[in-house]
Length: 87
Image 1 (tube, helix red, strand yellow):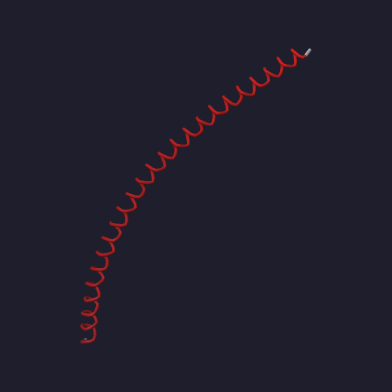
Image 2: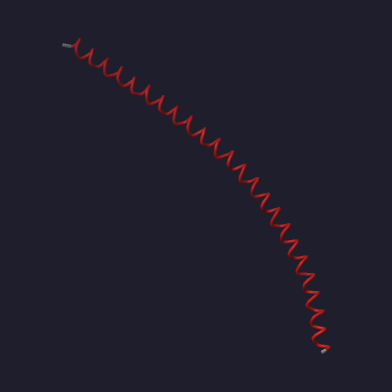
C-alpha cells in the first residue's frame, strides 16, 4: 500500500515538474516576443523622431518665409496708405 502512495507521489511530482518546465518555455517565448516588439517600437520611434525633426525644420523655414513676406507686405501697406492720404 505504501508503495502505491510513493508511486502516486512521484508521478505527481514528475507532473508538477513537467508543468513547470512547459510554463518556463512559455515564459521564455513571451519574453522573446516582448523583446522583439520593443526593438520594433524603438525602430519606429527613431523613424518618428527623424520625421519630427524634418517637419520642425520645414516649419521653421516656412515661418521664416512668411515673416519675410509679411515684412515686405507691411512696407507696401504703408506706401498705399501714403498714396491714399495724398488723394
